[in-house]
Image (cartoon, rainbow, N blue to C red; front, side, top):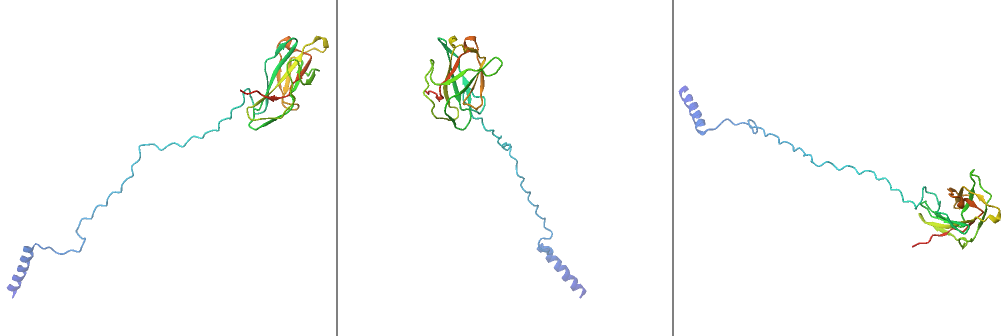
Length: 204
């Protein structure tokens, strides 16, 4: 019996060897585990991010010719002479942004060498140098202008001749005035001042 049992064992071992079988193992045991795939790394762009736009400062609105502020301003031209008479053109410009209403006559004073106001007659109307059409209402848009003519006489017969060093001129009585020096003795000799009303400047 012992010989028969040994023969059976050797027979089984031989069959296993011939069949090439191996011992069974549970699923998954003994197998190489898969390597986890590497996560993709986002690539950086070579182009730099656009810079934020620079703040744009509001551009200043253009002022009218001869303006030095945002207030209405008077300017004076060159003095013209004719047979003992003098005349100079005045221009009032709206240097602000809002419409400006004009009606009436400029305010003019003659100043002595000491800066004080001279006792000089000032009248409104026509003169030897120009005709006054009377006041009219004018609405000036920004940069627009009106004009007036200032004239005076240098008549020695009146006995009222005075030497003025400057003229103080404002758009109207009570408004801010500017000082304009008078150059030359023939121009500085003043008898009386005559003004025409503000009128719309010629166009074209």
